[in-house]
Amino acid sequence: MAALVLASVVFVGTHFLLSHPLRAPLAGRMGERLFQAFYSLVAAATFVPMIYFYGKIGREAPLWSAGDALWLLASLLMWFGSILFVGSFMRNPALPGARRPKGAPTGVFRITRHPMMWGFALWAIVHILVEATPKALVLDGAILFLALVGAAAQDRKKQGLMGERWHEWRAQTAFTPFAKGGAYPGTTAFVGGTLLFFLATWFHPLPAGFWRWIG
Image (cartoon, rainbow, N blue to C red; front, side):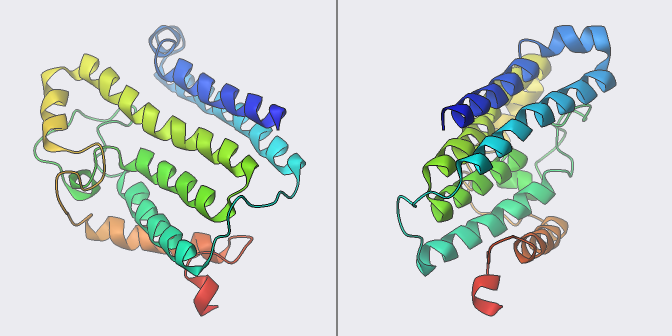
């Protein structure tokens, strides 16, 4: 377990270092494209040990039992997370190289200004809920921490880079989903996210999503 904890700390720590204090100097020296490749390489190199040590721990007794009600809640959350994730690729001002936010928010950005981060966060929450093992708390907890704390840090960074325009964007959008009221995510995000959810749960190694009940 200690190795998994250490690998998780390294994974989260390198993400924060490369996303914030080290990003500007490294991107300035390497160029944006080469830096993005380096960032992806470091992310993969630190994620693989997490998965390795996670698997090496073997089977663990769950800390609580995930019954049908919890599985149903988890399935609905994962469906929603999939919609947010797919929608996050459409006019996302937080993506590298994206244009500054312009006009009123559309699609999933009417729900939250961090749809990708919340997609990852909900994925982590769902796996904690249904797996309920100590190793799941460590690995999925690391991803949950990275997603939500990273989203908050991204707000501060974008405020410094974009100034008043990001301030206006924050005023029009919510950090927490639906904090500014209900909104439709858009047809493309809804359909694409639904397809992603059903395909991912169909190919899941364990019966997951609504396939647990419909076969």
